[in-house]
Length: 81
Image (tube, rainbow, N blue to C red):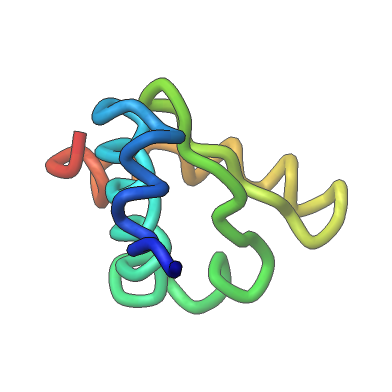
């Protein structure tokens, strides 16, 4: 009667999509460990697709600030790609 969620996920998503989602979950998990507190308070991980990390800034000023932190963020998550 009930099917395992893994079986449903296998049918709905390709292996590539599943792997990408696992990377996304790992990035979200590591965000609080690897990124400084000031950035954590003002930006959140929204999405990870096609090796592109999407962040959501608290306000437009922080959107501009994040431009200066791009290299730091890339460096912290480079090994996961």
